[in-house]
Length: 246
Image 1 (cartoon, rainbow, N blue to C red):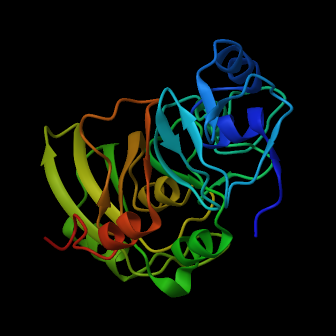
Image 2 (tube, rainbow, N blue to C red):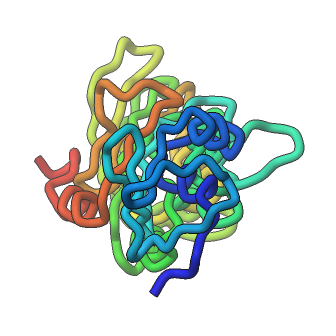
Protein backbone atom coordinates (compact mmCIF):
# COMPACT_ATOMS: atom_id res chain seq x y z
CA UNK A 1 0.00 0.00 0.00
CA UNK A 2 1.27 3.48 -0.82
CA UNK A 3 2.06 6.02 1.90
CA UNK A 4 -0.02 9.14 2.16
CA UNK A 5 1.25 11.95 -0.06
CA UNK A 6 0.78 15.70 0.03
CA UNK A 7 -1.65 16.85 -2.64
CA UNK A 8 0.68 19.43 -4.21
CA UNK A 9 3.41 16.80 -4.56
CA UNK A 10 0.90 14.33 -6.01
CA UNK A 11 -0.08 16.87 -8.67
CA UNK A 12 3.54 17.39 -9.66
CA UNK A 13 4.36 13.67 -9.78
CA UNK A 14 1.34 12.94 -11.95
CA UNK A 15 2.21 15.73 -14.37
CA UNK A 16 -0.88 17.80 -13.59
CA UNK A 17 1.33 20.59 -12.26
CA UNK A 18 4.79 21.70 -13.31
CA UNK A 19 5.90 22.61 -9.80
CA UNK A 20 4.52 22.88 -6.27
CA UNK A 21 3.88 26.60 -6.76
CA UNK A 22 1.97 25.74 -9.93
CA UNK A 23 0.03 23.12 -7.95
CA UNK A 24 -0.99 25.74 -5.37
CA UNK A 25 -2.39 27.97 -8.15
CA UNK A 26 -4.32 25.03 -9.61
CA UNK A 27 -5.77 24.19 -6.21
CA UNK A 28 -6.65 27.81 -5.45
CA UNK A 29 -8.68 27.88 -8.67
CA UNK A 30 -10.72 24.87 -7.53
CA UNK A 31 -9.59 22.58 -10.33
CA UNK A 32 -8.90 19.51 -8.19
CA UNK A 33 -11.33 17.07 -6.59
CA UNK A 34 -10.69 14.25 -4.14
CA UNK A 35 -13.69 12.00 -4.52
CA UNK A 36 -16.74 14.27 -4.65
CA UNK A 37 -15.22 17.28 -2.91
CA UNK A 38 -13.18 20.14 -4.30
CA UNK A 39 -9.88 20.40 -2.42
CA UNK A 40 -7.93 23.68 -2.29
CA UNK A 41 -5.46 22.85 0.47
CA UNK A 42 -1.99 22.00 -0.90
CA UNK A 43 -1.11 20.30 2.40
CA UNK A 44 -4.04 17.89 2.20
CA UNK A 45 -2.98 14.25 1.91
CA UNK A 46 -4.09 11.62 -0.55
CA UNK A 47 -3.61 7.87 -0.76
CA UNK A 48 -2.43 7.16 -4.35
CA UNK A 49 -3.76 3.61 -4.12
CA UNK A 50 -7.29 4.33 -2.98
CA UNK A 51 -8.22 8.00 -3.43
CA UNK A 52 -9.86 9.10 -6.66
CA UNK A 53 -8.31 12.43 -7.69
CA UNK A 54 -9.67 14.49 -10.57
CA UNK A 55 -7.99 17.45 -12.31
CA UNK A 56 -10.31 19.50 -14.52
CA UNK A 57 -12.77 16.62 -14.31
CA UNK A 58 -10.27 13.99 -15.51
CA UNK A 59 -8.95 11.30 -13.19
CA UNK A 60 -5.19 11.38 -12.63
CA UNK A 61 -3.16 8.54 -11.18
CA UNK A 62 0.29 8.15 -9.67
CA UNK A 63 2.65 5.51 -11.02
CA UNK A 64 5.57 4.18 -9.00
CA UNK A 65 7.87 4.03 -12.02
CA UNK A 66 7.80 6.52 -14.86
CA UNK A 67 9.74 6.67 -18.11
CA UNK A 68 10.51 9.76 -20.18
CA UNK A 69 12.11 9.87 -23.61
CA UNK A 70 13.96 13.17 -23.95
CA UNK A 71 15.48 14.69 -27.06
CA UNK A 72 18.56 15.94 -25.26
CA UNK A 73 19.80 19.23 -26.70
CA UNK A 74 23.44 20.23 -26.92
CA UNK A 75 24.99 22.17 -24.03
CA UNK A 76 22.93 20.31 -21.41
CA UNK A 77 24.64 17.70 -19.26
CA UNK A 78 23.40 14.19 -18.47
CA UNK A 79 23.24 14.58 -14.71
CA UNK A 80 20.69 15.09 -11.97
CA UNK A 81 22.27 18.25 -10.55
CA UNK A 82 25.12 20.59 -11.47
CA UNK A 83 26.27 23.91 -10.01
CA UNK A 84 27.34 25.36 -13.35
CA UNK A 85 25.51 23.79 -16.29
CA UNK A 86 21.87 23.06 -17.04
CA UNK A 87 20.95 19.40 -16.60
CA UNK A 88 18.56 17.07 -18.41
CA UNK A 89 16.43 16.77 -15.27
CA UNK A 90 15.66 20.49 -15.44
CA UNK A 91 13.89 19.86 -18.76
CA UNK A 92 11.37 17.47 -17.19
CA UNK A 93 9.39 19.15 -14.36
CA UNK A 94 7.72 15.87 -13.32
CA UNK A 95 11.07 14.16 -12.74
CA UNK A 96 12.32 14.92 -9.22
CA UNK A 97 16.16 14.96 -9.42
CA UNK A 98 16.26 13.32 -6.02
CA UNK A 99 14.62 10.19 -7.47
CA UNK A 100 15.00 10.28 -11.27
CA UNK A 101 18.16 9.90 -13.32
CA UNK A 102 19.32 9.57 -16.93
CA UNK A 103 19.81 6.05 -18.25
CA UNK A 104 23.46 6.25 -19.27
CA UNK A 105 24.77 9.57 -20.50
CA UNK A 106 25.40 11.69 -23.55
CA UNK A 107 28.29 14.15 -23.77
CA UNK A 108 27.43 17.81 -23.25
CA UNK A 109 27.85 18.60 -26.95
CA UNK A 110 25.98 15.47 -28.09
CA UNK A 111 22.24 15.55 -28.68
CA UNK A 112 19.63 12.86 -29.15
CA UNK A 113 17.69 10.10 -27.43
CA UNK A 114 18.05 9.93 -23.66
CA UNK A 115 15.78 8.04 -21.28
CA UNK A 116 14.97 9.41 -17.82
CA UNK A 117 13.43 7.16 -15.17
CA UNK A 118 13.30 6.19 -11.51
CA UNK A 119 13.41 2.46 -12.35
CA UNK A 120 16.88 1.16 -11.49
CA UNK A 121 16.34 -2.38 -12.82
CA UNK A 122 15.24 -1.02 -16.20
CA UNK A 123 18.26 1.29 -16.37
CA UNK A 124 20.66 -1.52 -15.52
CA UNK A 125 19.28 -3.72 -18.30
CA UNK A 126 19.90 -1.01 -20.87
CA UNK A 127 23.36 0.04 -19.72
CA UNK A 128 24.98 -3.29 -18.84
CA UNK A 129 27.34 -4.35 -21.68
CA UNK A 130 26.42 -7.98 -20.96
CA UNK A 131 22.84 -7.30 -22.07
CA UNK A 132 24.13 -6.19 -25.52
CA UNK A 133 21.55 -3.47 -26.07
CA UNK A 134 22.96 -1.50 -28.99
CA UNK A 135 22.87 2.30 -29.03
CA UNK A 136 22.97 3.86 -32.49
CA UNK A 137 24.67 7.17 -33.22
CA UNK A 138 24.51 9.37 -36.28
CA UNK A 139 27.84 11.13 -36.78
CA UNK A 140 29.30 13.65 -39.16
CA UNK A 141 33.05 13.13 -39.25
CA UNK A 142 36.10 14.45 -41.08
CA UNK A 143 37.23 12.54 -44.16
CA UNK A 144 35.90 9.21 -45.40
CA UNK A 145 36.59 5.93 -43.55
CA UNK A 146 38.50 3.34 -45.56
CA UNK A 147 37.45 -0.30 -45.63
CA UNK A 148 40.30 -1.26 -43.32
CA UNK A 149 39.25 1.39 -40.80
CA UNK A 150 35.65 0.20 -40.88
CA UNK A 151 36.81 -3.37 -40.20
CA UNK A 152 38.63 -2.12 -37.10
CA UNK A 153 35.42 -0.57 -35.79
CA UNK A 154 33.50 -3.74 -36.47
CA UNK A 155 36.05 -6.05 -34.84
CA UNK A 156 36.93 -3.90 -31.81
CA UNK A 157 39.52 -1.19 -31.26
CA UNK A 158 42.13 -1.13 -28.50
CA UNK A 159 42.05 2.28 -26.85
CA UNK A 160 44.34 3.48 -24.07
CA UNK A 161 42.24 1.98 -21.29
CA UNK A 162 40.13 -0.78 -22.86
CA UNK A 163 39.28 -2.65 -26.03
CA UNK A 164 35.86 -1.92 -27.47
CA UNK A 165 33.34 -4.65 -28.20
CA UNK A 166 32.56 -5.24 -31.89
CA UNK A 167 30.45 -2.41 -33.30
CA UNK A 168 28.04 -2.13 -36.19
CA UNK A 169 28.85 0.47 -38.85
CA UNK A 170 26.92 1.87 -41.76
CA UNK A 171 28.31 4.42 -44.20
CA UNK A 172 25.71 6.93 -45.40
CA UNK A 173 27.36 9.51 -47.64
CA UNK A 174 30.47 11.63 -48.15
CA UNK A 175 31.56 14.73 -50.04
CA UNK A 176 35.21 13.84 -49.59
CA UNK A 177 35.97 16.29 -46.78
CA UNK A 178 33.23 15.02 -44.48
CA UNK A 179 31.16 11.85 -44.12
CA UNK A 180 27.92 10.84 -42.46
CA UNK A 181 27.78 7.45 -40.75
CA UNK A 182 25.86 5.31 -38.28
CA UNK A 183 27.69 3.51 -35.49
CA UNK A 184 26.04 1.14 -33.02
CA UNK A 185 27.78 0.08 -29.81
CA UNK A 186 26.67 -2.08 -26.89
CA UNK A 187 28.80 -0.14 -24.38
CA UNK A 188 28.77 3.47 -23.28
CA UNK A 189 32.09 4.55 -21.85
CA UNK A 190 33.27 8.15 -21.57
CA UNK A 191 33.52 9.78 -25.03
CA UNK A 192 33.55 6.28 -26.53
CA UNK A 193 32.12 7.02 -29.98
CA UNK A 194 34.37 10.05 -30.44
CA UNK A 195 37.39 8.06 -29.30
CA UNK A 196 36.61 5.19 -31.65
CA UNK A 197 36.47 7.48 -34.67
CA UNK A 198 39.58 9.31 -33.49
CA UNK A 199 41.43 5.98 -33.22
CA UNK A 200 40.92 5.40 -36.97
CA UNK A 201 41.95 8.95 -37.86
CA UNK A 202 38.65 10.86 -38.02
CA UNK A 203 37.26 13.67 -35.87
CA UNK A 204 33.60 13.79 -34.91
CA UNK A 205 32.07 17.11 -35.95
CA UNK A 206 28.52 16.35 -34.86
CA UNK A 207 27.02 13.47 -32.89
CA UNK A 208 23.43 12.46 -32.24
CA UNK A 209 22.04 9.30 -30.64
CA UNK A 210 19.08 8.17 -32.70
CA UNK A 211 18.18 4.79 -31.19
CA UNK A 212 18.46 2.40 -28.26
CA UNK A 213 17.80 -1.06 -29.63
CA UNK A 214 14.69 -0.65 -31.77
CA UNK A 215 13.53 2.46 -29.87
CA UNK A 216 14.14 5.40 -32.20
CA UNK A 217 14.08 9.12 -31.55
CA UNK A 218 10.74 10.46 -32.87
CA UNK A 219 11.35 12.73 -35.88
CA UNK A 220 8.87 15.31 -34.63
CA UNK A 221 10.38 15.56 -31.14
CA UNK A 222 12.47 18.73 -31.03
CA UNK A 223 15.58 19.22 -28.86
CA UNK A 224 14.46 19.88 -25.30
CA UNK A 225 11.10 18.17 -25.78
CA UNK A 226 10.12 14.88 -24.15
CA UNK A 227 7.45 12.22 -24.14
CA UNK A 228 6.28 9.82 -21.45
CA UNK A 229 6.09 6.10 -22.21
CA UNK A 230 5.00 3.03 -20.28
CA UNK A 231 7.47 0.26 -19.46
CA UNK A 232 5.57 -2.04 -21.80
CA UNK A 233 5.83 0.43 -24.70
CA UNK A 234 9.57 0.83 -24.19
CA UNK A 235 10.26 -2.89 -23.85
CA UNK A 236 8.37 -3.62 -27.05
CA UNK A 237 10.19 -0.90 -28.98
CA UNK A 238 13.67 -1.65 -27.63
CA UNK A 239 13.30 -5.34 -28.42
CA UNK A 240 12.25 -4.55 -31.99
CA UNK A 241 14.49 -4.18 -35.03
CA UNK A 242 17.11 -1.47 -34.57
CA UNK A 243 18.29 0.88 -37.37
CA UNK A 244 21.39 -1.19 -38.09
CA UNK A 245 19.55 -4.45 -38.72
CA UNK A 246 16.62 -3.40 -40.91
